[in-house]
Amino acid sequence: MSDRAVYLLAVVTGLGAVVAVAVHPLIGVALLLLGLGRRRATLVILACGLLASSLSARAEEGAQSLRARRFTGWVTLLDDPAPAPGGVKVVVRIDGRHVEAWAQGVAAFEVGRRLAGEQLAVSGVIRPVPEARRRRDAHRHVVGRLAIGVVHGAGSGSPLHRTANWLHRTLARGARSLPLSERGLYLGFVVGDTRLLGVDTAALFQRVGLTHLLAVSGANVAFVLAAAAPLLRRLRMRGRALGALAVIGFFATVTRFEPSVLRASAMAALAVLAQASGRPASGLRLLALATTALVILDPFLVWSIGFRLSVGASLGILALAAPIGRRCPGPRWLAEPLSVTAAAQIGVAPVAIPVFGGLPVAALPANLLVAPVVGPLMMWGLVAGTIAGALGERAAGVLHVPTHLLISWVRLVARGTDALPSASIGAPAATASAAVVLVVIAVRWRRLRRRLGSPPWRSSSATPASTSRLGRS
Image 1 (tube, rainbow, N blue to C red):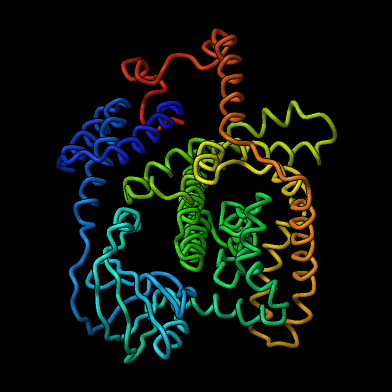
Image 2 (image 1 turned 180 degrees about the horizontal axis):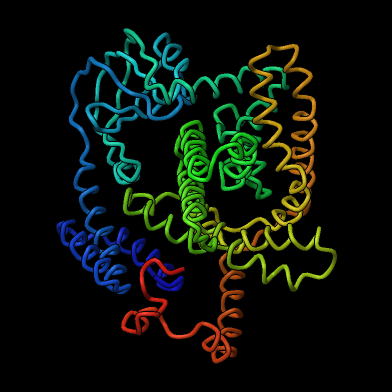
């Protein structure tokens, strides 16, 4: 399948998940198998769109709120308990359904000690989701509320979760040597855990456009693979690929499979498989395939702001960073981070402007100034942080000196750029910019058409050597 057909595949699949038509999924599966068998890109695109639409409709039907009843039994934590007014809250699984659990007092203390993947024996009351939040919670697969009254016991979960939680606790233990104000930032930078992040700090990072540093992205996955590279290089090609996939899966477990984690992990896994098969693919192709697969697996991802921002930022960087960089004056060490930052901001604009009311102008200088330390902070924070947590507080105090300095620089940049005159790019400015881009594209349409060639729906009936054939990159 050509690259252009793959891009269209991702768009149609996403639109299908939004529309949510109640048809039987087997129709989409049958069309998909037919398209794959006959190597027809158009059929594959339509089949994936129809399949995403039918699965989305089924997911909405299955998101009916639970009825009120008393509950006693085992629950599995699906994420890490987070502070809530008067206690803690966490999403748990009960009989295959997702429920948001709340606990106060002694029960809150017992729940708060646990991490994702672990189990608790509890007693409490299940209530329906409030009407005002029913649709929003349904898109998180949450179908009820559980007020936990008593915790009777606990279980450690699967071996994978036990290992992931050991690493999580080790990093948190080593971070105790850092000032309290930096611990939340450290865990956010390394594993995307922002539970200890203060409200003021979170608001500061949002105002200056640095919130993405606290969410796991492709950069985190790349740094983890780089850290594992000395061991992976000792393996043969197939073992290296399997080892890389295992590292990606383990890191996704540690970072709790958040939407941005899913996008980054799926792209990394596809890149590993493409490299191992001897057919490396472009970043845009990997993004489109990863997005398509994830939306089919969970159609509700199209409603996740984090997922949209992650996809938008990746799309902007992959599509626009290089062209912007070629036109940026000045040395390459300045032009490259400038182009990446600008491209990412353009990519997230369609999501960020309606949701947050605009894009902070301070994001450009802030990201340029922190760019040199982000990589070392993530790498050193993960490797040295694990050693620090294992060796104890004295070693952690020494090992985390570089961590403290790097985080201090990021905080200094955030505060400095926040002191600049506040300004943001709102909907009018973004609309005007989009209009200018459309005019430029219209003026240069003939040239673009010659470079892009025929559209994918025409290429599906071309000769056997056509790029519309599936599997061709």
